Image (cartoon, rainbow, N blue to C red; front, side, top):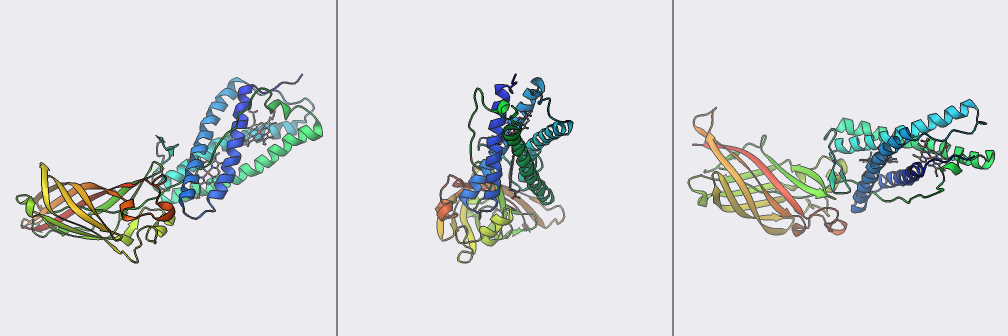
Length: 372
Ligand code: HEM
Ligand code: HEM
């Protein structure tokens, strides 16, 4: 009498089989692509399907522990039973290890996973180049181990069916039902620029401790970066905010999101075109107080040949400098929303906001000092 796997076991097996074959092809294809919206989409789908495989495998193992597999044919010699069990054990191991390695690699590369662009998953490690490279290698090795195991696995199934004529293949075939699975795959990036504030006559910005950062969304994955170089001329006296002014010059080529491929692309024509537009300038005068130490600063951002009115919400606090009684220090933080498309940051294939959202939040944290 033929004993079949349960319908649920078959469903899990074939759903996983289709997803894994797609993941292997997709993984190899997407890593061969140049940076492009398609590449980012495929990376996202790869991650989403891969995490789904992890979830399905956990459910599948729970089912397996409570519903044993049908016994192998009596005619099978012990070493073949061991090979079959060992092979299945390793396949299950890889179905858990591969998604985990991909997840850690992605997180360490600075790209948290947002499952199907909806559910942000916990970030297991956060940016760490060495860990990212290690897990990228483990993921790659695992992928090839999986390919070899699957060749043996599929070969064995066909051998049972065509040479041994036993029921090992048929008992896994959808006697009742099966299901198709899915999908396609992806990664990350962005672009943008900044603006901001300081304090009374001329304040000297401390460029070591000051920062201009930005946050964008790529298929709902938050992507952050910074501009490493900028200068600021700030006139600000809390007693006379009307007379305050700011001019911020940002070196567009100093942009970085900490991903080599993206950092090479961002200064190029499609993004910041730094050869023609090396500097982004934010200028404003007259700070409107809206609360204690908080101001609304309306100014103009000139970036890549386009000017846009930008409103910066800033908090600026001045205090005596503990190390120098003749000086004051100021700390200014705040943010502004900037439209990347208004400045053609991301042209051609990048112009669609389906992959990279239009809105970019530029944040600053400036430290400055001046003589009393
Ligand atoms: C077209 C490709 C495939 C064929 C023809 C196939 C065939 C089979 C068959 C006949 C069995 C039952 C073996 C037995 O009764 O002892 C089985 C079990 C299994 N297959 Fe596949 N398979 C394929 C693809 C895959 C893929 C892609 C994976 C996962 C990466 C996979 C993972 C497993 C596992 C883990 C078992 C053990 C089930 C258990 O007893 O718990 N298979 N496969
Ligand atoms: C069973 C599940 C999975 C399989 C079979 C699989 C397979 C692959 C393959 C064949 C590659 C191309 C080889 C390489 O360059 O490393 C790859 C790359 C990659 N996979 Fe997966 N993957 C899985 C799950 C995941 C998951 C869950 C994530 C992230 C959440 C992920 C993230 C990545 C990334 C980021 C790359 C590019 C690696 C690099 O650039 O070094 N994978 N995957």
